[in-house]
Length: 301
Image (cartoon, rainbow, N blue to C red):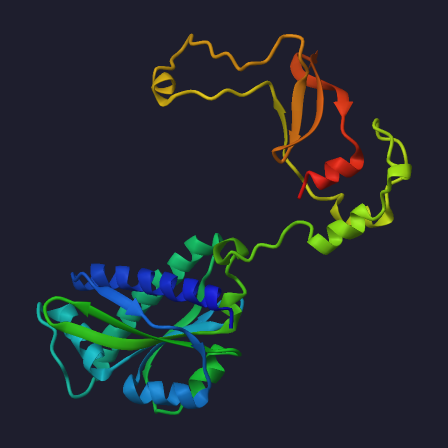
């Protein structure tokens, strides 16, 4: 289980789901989730004994998600759709289950839609089902797929609606969480790879400043990476009051002399200098000074 990814899925799904509950039931729900943990059939069976009402969905592309509610909470949700007061029922009839299915379609759809927004890609359900569980967790575990993660949560709404439930998802969903959300983005070049690359250079064999000479073979691992090149005319620090007074026609001195070369930066690292030229009515930069290839690679750290 990826703890960071699991937490993002839980929070994203619950937020989307309870936003729909708020709209459908004219309530303002608050909720709080507990720590997630990778689970097994016995633990799911225990959860089903406490919360036997299952709202589950298969996710296109693999995996699934499910919400377990107690009979008391499910009946309160059903009665809220037909009246102003949440009431407890001893059992749910076919009409109640039909109402729950409509609510599940919206709530699970809202949860999945929120995950789509977080992930930056379409997350869609293959099917949504509502049923009363038998207390055997093996069927639900098989439905969700490998690596089922269980998270308990509580929720409340005025007046006097305090509930609890369980959210389950499969590990396949965690694989779809972007690394940028979990803080697990890998560096373009690891320290070991950088050491390997730089080992191909020595003071006696330094590459010619104008680009001649052979590169070490293992440099190929980074040659396809795209970096941002910026031509910097100059820079200056300004107090906030001067920035607020800027307008059309204002002139800013950037501390750059007319005959000084312009700096070329790669990913905000200085690698060369040159003169501004015009090529086909567009500005360009003619390189006049460049640091060694070894120093350029080191500047990318």
